[in-house]
Image (cartoon, rainbow, N blue to C red; front, side, top):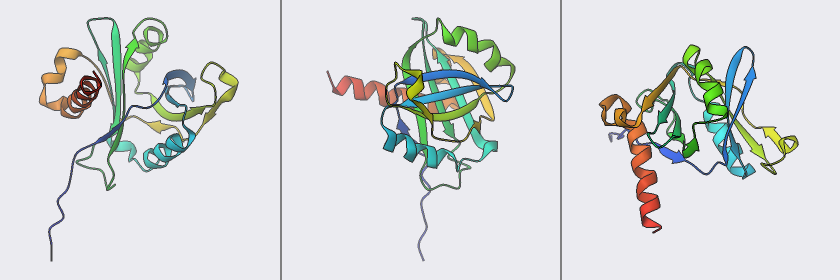
Amino acid sequence: MYNKIMSFEITWHDNFYGISWAYEKDRLVVSTVFEDKPEATLIAQEIEEWSDKFTRLTIVEKANGEFSICCYEDPQISKSSEHIGLFRTGMIQSGGYEQAKPMIEEKPPLLQIAYAADVRDMTTYEQISRLVPMRKCRIISEKDLKKQEYYFERTAHIEKKSDEDSKK
């Protein structure tokens, strides 16, 4: 007999083009837009297994006018052996985000995976996943990442920073 060690580490996927904001079923939809269809399909299959009760969406507003977005299922509760999350940073707060923020604060949005053959042409966008409700949605400042309750968001930021540093 052996003890299976549970890992709470999240594999962060940040290879998506950006965020598309939409409104459907009286809710805001945060669509992560991928240019790689096989990757979008793989991630869609995983998030469709997420329990609606343990999904998290955190938006981190930065002092430089940018924001990052972090979506995941709490790995401490997840029944999945694979723990994946979506993370993207460097997006500008002006424009779509400013319009979406009041709706996000009012009611947690839905998450969707999308694929675009050409991200500049909305007619090539294709919905890949179902609309996944985000149970807990938070908008925080970058300094809040120090708090223990934002452990997973902090690790996503640290991993992204170390990836960028290794490319220099």
